[in-house]
Length: 309
Image 1 (cartoon, helix red, strand yellow):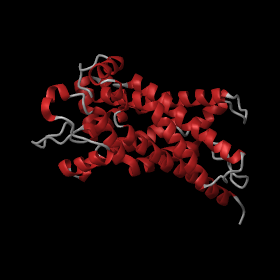
Image 2 (cartoon, one colour):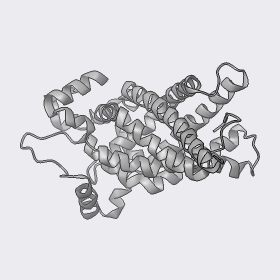
Image 3 (cartoon, one colour):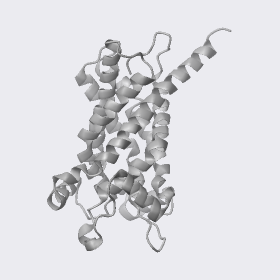
Image 4 (cartoon, rainbow, N blue to C red):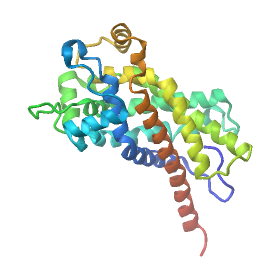
């Protein structure tokens, strides 16, 4: 990322890789209930024809959280957290940690990167990350969508059981279910998130509006979260619906989108928008602030080890 202070050593690719994964896990720990509420709101409506008169169970972000705590207990808000943390260590590490390296690859080592190089870097690392982390994303969404039944029998007994059950019942391909919409989503999310953060931070520093410190990182991250939510929500809803669906419900992600449009109208693509924004905004803030601090802390520690006493 831009804007390292002269007193700081530039972080290595390894530091960025593991720093991004760690920062992603920290952000997930803080914002996971919002992500779970978003998933519940996104899938709401897909089973209404069968449920008939049950109507709308969840209303709004905090109404969804309140309903889940009341009906399923507080732990339901963190259902799928283990898979979520596994996802961040394999996902955020690649898509965020390798972004600068990929940007340098497309600019052939030049320090000055144009918008096209940034977008290409964001698309590339986003797609690469999905290839590594898709099974963890499928399991995370399944757990978040899992409502505790009256008889207490859950769809999966644990994270490893979910991987085994999906592979057994749906084939190994089931673990990569929704891979195409997820690649599409993450190409969009990565571009919107990283490129917007990069540009906002660069402009803030260029015009001396703030120093390269926490307020600057906070502002850039908030802007990145807002822009990302607007452009990524429709693909995110389709991805969630398709990944959570039983075998045969939708033939493809495109069929899933067409069914949503036909049965629920265009507003279905922005179901869960507020929790998406609350989650992405807060996730971006926690992640980018943590990422910047982790990078600097590691490099300062390394510098202090290498400098003579």
